Length: 292
Image (cartoon, rainbow, N blue to C red; front, side, top):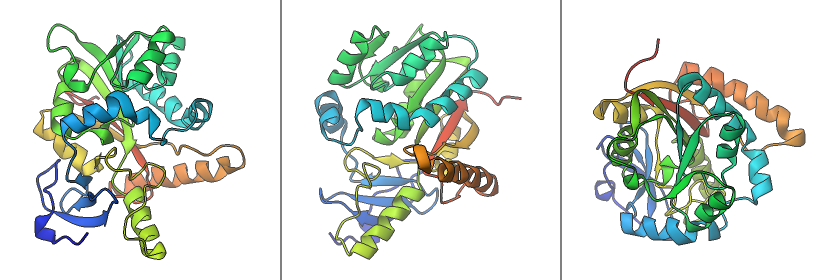
């Protein structure tokens, strides 16, 4: 698929122009914002397409690891997320959006943290109910509009699936107490697209690879950059309180030492530049006011 630069979509985060990274077999493309670096799909799936995908189909597409393996590889992410929630949301109720298998909600319950979930997938919703978790089925726009506030909102690997980040973050913040925080983790704008482009060049493929779901169209829509998240928060009257490189997932056993070394390198790199290219995911902490 050949595309001229002036035909590419505007950035869904800041509205700036974009440049092509690579095309996908479904005739979509990944593009990068020339201003804030955010990576997004072009064209963006509609809300109707996404509701169909996540209500019935997502658990069957094969990108999720088997439950027990997933639980193990997500362990570094879950430990770090729990630490941040204890630090930034020490009191009150935690709402997890997109709890999936419910592994993190299990950790919250074991830590005596009151929690509930909002899950769009029918398969996951059934599983969560069977585990006795407090969960409702729905999408972000189904959050209550009035008289329901939580101390913290948590999302892991959800934000990249959304086709309107501004509207989603606005809806999420509407259920947040004035002293509460949103803690979210998601793959972001640098390492995945760089790797995908390198692999495409060396394999001479006409399409950028999925990378195990990292660049899977139409599921991963917006790989936001720290700079893009900062601009998004400012536009919505929110504050990006903190940004952290997410601990590396998916490596256990003998590969644990390289993973630890990579995490150390990324922590140092993140202090040097918001555009440090080796970070695969970020944790963002968002609220209504700065923390001292």
